[in-house]
Image 1 (cartoon, rainbow, N blue to C red):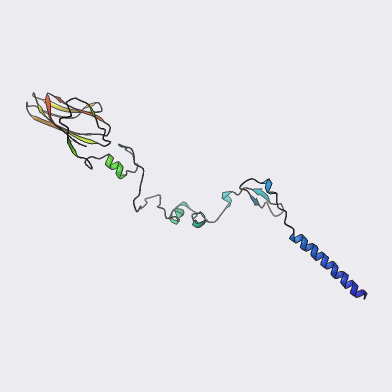
Image 2 (image 1 turned 90 degrees about the vertical axis):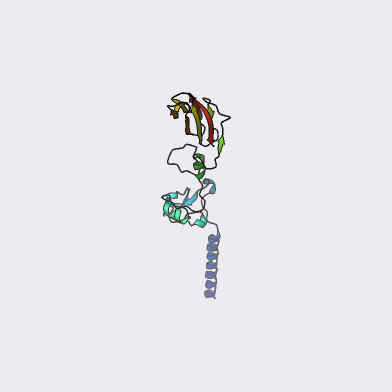
Length: 216
């Protein structure tokens, strides 16, 4: 009988100890107080013998590659990232489709990329037509090229005395182009390119202007 009572007492003690251990296991682990952290921090290990602490994760401490699906490049170098993302290399790229670029200001003279719009704005002939300006232009009068593109001026004249001359002035610089003849009543003529926005005039010195045309 005593033996049975001892066994029952021992079993009861073991059950109590088991329930106590179970209660301890089910109790939530007490971590650091979130109020002690700042936005964006994480719980970081401080070593095997010390408690973890709130801290910021340095990007340099991370390793590996982040897949494209997760916002990464799936690469560890810049060149590999360009390839992975399907981008053109920075050196000697081969572009497809219809690439676009900023258009430089007119008369830009650098190694900057030239778009088709820049080329058209700085060349003559394409998209321009000849106009007769004989009735609206006079000798020695200054005009302004406000077309936004270079134009070409063609002027024909007739000398009134020997050594009669036609000369063009651009932006105040005279004799940019000249045409003369040692004979009287002889035809003279000149052509000159006028940059966009420039002022220009053609003057007859001992010569009359007979015709004035512009490619604009």
